[in-house]
Figure 1 (cartoon, rainbow, N blue to C red):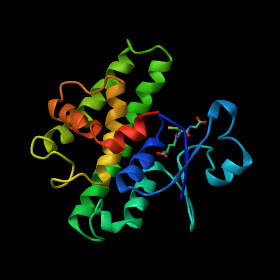
Figure 2: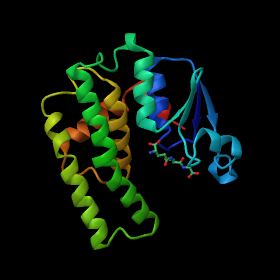
Figure 3: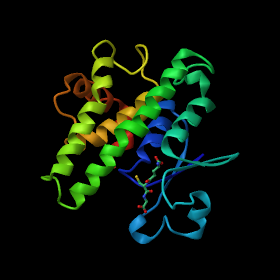
Figure 4: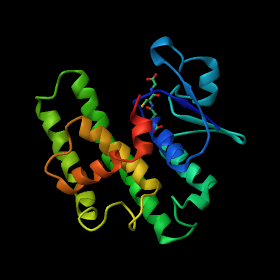
Length: 198
Ligand SMILES: N[C@@H](CCC(=O)N[C@@H](CS)C(=O)NCC(=O)O)C(=O)O
């Protein structure tokens, strides 16, 4: 299995998942600054010339959250996603879509504003507000559990954890002690350290 990868991007999500699963894989580092994501070869893997892309013996898959779910499906004995039709799996879908549709968009907006030096604007303030509302359900969830679902780490934690780590880097995680404690638990995991270590 090959993972097309750029460090410190959304590629860390499938990489983290591969490390959690303990699955042998080849990391193919691409350098966008050298145009390596814009070659014809990479465009056939990802039409938007992005990473991550996972190449499996059956074909390639893009979209970080989809790859994380697919990896959980490929290694069911690792128990990182509940059985098909189970409530555990329904909650995994819930939190994973929540991460991608509620938590990630404010992070994208804030990153753009940061790059443009516009953090002291009313628009940036509005994004901070939007994010602090969006993490409320997680703040409640982590008041009664260490991880998203049940008592154990699972696939949803990879996507939610990675988006929260991004938000935290942007300074968006504020006044949320349970989310902050969750982030510390997540960051202490050897697989997280490996995925985010370069
Ligand atoms: N929704 C996609 C987003 C993929 C994406 O935007 N990837 C960025 C890195 S985080 C990228 O490949 N950028 C390449 C470039 O800028 O050349 C996912 O979650 O996989």
